[in-house]
Image 1: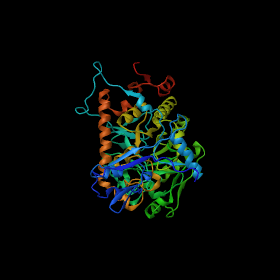
Image 2: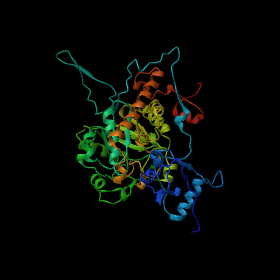
Image 3: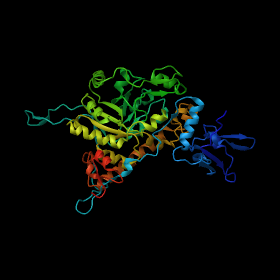
Length: 503
């Protein structure tokens, strides 16, 4: 081997004075970093992924991880990552896979947007003492309402309303399929959204029968592979989402490795056990907006026009005109997924180089729909890198109706964002189908943790709105006067339609 080994990413060490030799590090590490030889625990740091399961489970805090204990000679162009990618491909001749979202050190627009607060002349609102309206309706809104008077003198609504999803908080959980994540992870999130009065997505992996009790809070997905899709599946969901693109890998399909397709995944997805589940890049029946209209109307017809249909697209350069076309296509909501959106597995070159930030995409789409007078025709759901209640508030002020979270919900379940989801070895029981690992995640406890996260963000959103003198989410939506840009250039401010700080 002429290439030899590369420097280890992590150095794991045990404080032998603190260690009680309980062996929990060996039991908990699914990557095989620890092993016992005689009466000693030996460490193989090269296998460490930085998942931190061993650190979390060590009762004596005896384990220490050091990142990049040996690094390459520093160089501004030929970074460690660039050199290691070349070495990997020189060895394998294959595409490099990665998990989670874009990992490049690019500026985060959310961090350069600042929210407004009231002072003296415009009073703030105390959300602890005054009602705050956070209910959000996702779906088509009529351009006007017509009423009629009945013979008895009562007034009735004459306009027929399209089916909408009612959310008690503008936070939903995005689509993560059974197969990519475990059933216990899906159950945890399903219990949480049902308790909170919001929704989660099934992903393209079908709907496991254990999730049927929560189906009124599930959005079922129809993706290019059509895994698990039949009339029973469509009728069980509260809404249907057609997935055209994904922020982490725009322009390509999906791939669930065969080793993650066990009997349960096989039955739910309706594919053979152990076979790779490969979703093609395009839907083979959609090559135009007109084709998309046909699929949307077919799904509505199949479900008797009782369920809203969403269309999910990746945030790319022409996202605004595409969204405008979708708004005219009978769809009820467009889901825009930014380039920081997570994934179980994606080619690294796509994950880190394709797409645009969700902040820019929201502003562009909202502006385009307003210009064309069709903003009421469709709701905007934003996803891809929503990390906090501040990101949520800024997304809504830029024009989103609601957000989908993904990685944040997984972190609430224990994920440490080590990015090895595709290996089926997740030691937290989230991105794995191995029974001994899945059993580590208790759905009841997981549901409490996810629920707590969404509750916390919802409380913080109320506080942010109150500070800005706003008591209704409707008044925050698209209210860019409540934002100011800091350290953003003139062109970016123009696209966001936001004034600079101090103006």
